[in-house]
Image (cartoon, rainbow, N blue to C red):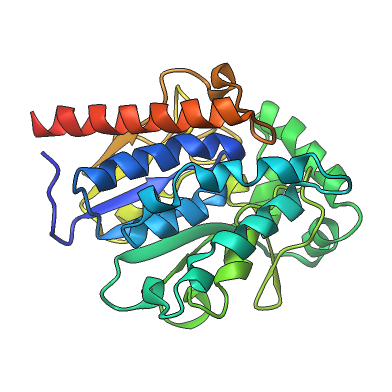
Length: 294
């Protein structure tokens, strides 16, 4: 059975753009049944729903968060950068909670995975006019499981509300971190910077920060994936996230079918599909809880 109200449980949510409505549904189901983690961790599109989950308000944010993005997709000259930045503007807990409770000591630890750009060459490519072309090359490389460019130019970096120094996540950098974690090069045209340093989407180095929460000292981890099948550490699919890592259990919750079956893909979705996928997440969350409480 999952242990509650101890310094043991972390919930890590995977990337997936619009497919992230599934993870949000799972978070809402866990919240509704009283599962409260000591830490919440996110990558890319799961950043904002997971932040609200850390506040105990994932259900309050609800599927309306995902539906609000759909009208933007139909506007001229609006791409995924504008969609994501619009979501941050309207749904960031940093703005909607003036008391900054996400960053208060009594709030569970909240972590966001990103990919730091560590070479001058990559800085020019990722933040300049060549970014989209590079992004397409990396998609092809991912299909071939060729991670060589990432190994040379990127570094997985996790920001946290409980860390001090450069990796501290607070009100001053939340919006920058949230956008940087979700900036895929092939379709997001606005560069991402955190504290003046270049970053790109977490998915290049971390699809779901589950093993990172084990490394941080948590003794049980729930990993919420947004696609069926093997949950991998990054988009290159070379290393699977195991069900046990360093002796710590990682409990993986995932949909029964690919969200495309509901009409939800990475960068496009229907209203009906988002509702259905969110509800499927709630169902899988309740199914998981029933299994662990039986």
